[in-house]
Image 1 (cartoon, rainbow, N blue to C red):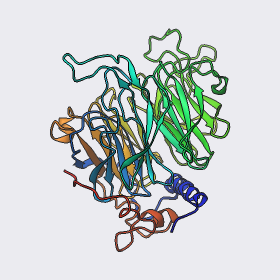
Image 2: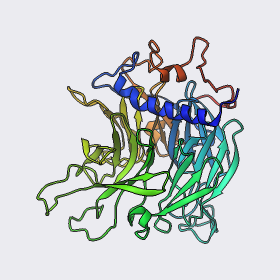
Image 3: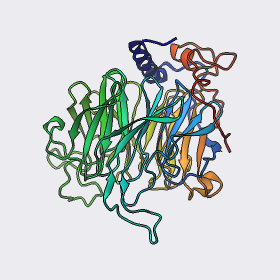
Image 4: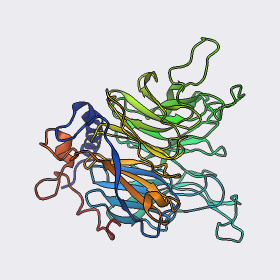
Length: 466
């Protein structure tokens, strides 16, 4: 039976709201232990190997983890209940290209009621990495940046949306209420946001972040554009900007100016609020800003209790959690720096930070949403280049990919997707009595299927975890 589209959208928003409230509800059957220890419990070997990759994404409604795999020019799809892997749209992306910010795929999400993967691609350069010697810069751009839309059932590309960037299309996020995807082109040759209708697959608007656009409050992003998210509580997009307006560098810091979080209205396609993420000593007030631990906000995750986690660069001391209403500091995460992608998992009420550039060596940052009273959780080692993280709230499995140099993480030189879990007894949200609507929607019944289980619908997997 087909659901009417408005019912599908309401269901998608319901799932998101359930995710963001379940942490505060302390779901029965999940252990929220103090000082939990997260350890590697397994790994998934990727067909064709894994060296270059970007963002990961978990959709708990369909029980899938997706990874943007540049090595194989594909989206890796993992069934979270079995950790079997299958590649979608293999060969349909530009893959590795010469120069910076040219390769793809990059950002990846699901959209249109969990039936499609939307993945941001790079550009096609006139020269190649396969020449001798390999090209180090992109020559002429033969094909500009684009978004590939993949039917999860067939694994095939159904729509290619060219958004005209001279460098890659990068991170993206969906507003299911207004049927809209926000996409960022983060290179200084582009510096714009694209808004695409998930109904028509057409571009419906853009915002420039080059300092000239009044719809962006003339914000100039001088060190890239990072992770975006949509909040079902406010109905707004939020976007991390590592550095705003550049300029002099009196403190000799890697980031010259404060970064910011932008709140964007998906109906007007305008920046409504700018939350400065300040740093260092403010001579005009004689104080240090509350968010001074964060130099260069990069990763972003929407948490419960009006929280937004910002994973920050290794130029500062740590990362921060801010209030989505006004940007005020909720909590400093001193020592957790060098983050790229970050994630909130309602299954165990934890934040996770992929800190491949951490000053003390690459780690998986682990933070209780409710601070421990006897000590924070340990942060397990990962590997240089492991800048991606996503978590399945049903099983509490944490997916962290590693490249072919991550020999300690992957046990070899072909890369892998490492799986971390708590060493404590933790059955996940499906391990106890089902009390919430969210659990009823995503947890399997006695026959192994959930109320809206779609695992038989979305294709067979071809290889088990290695």
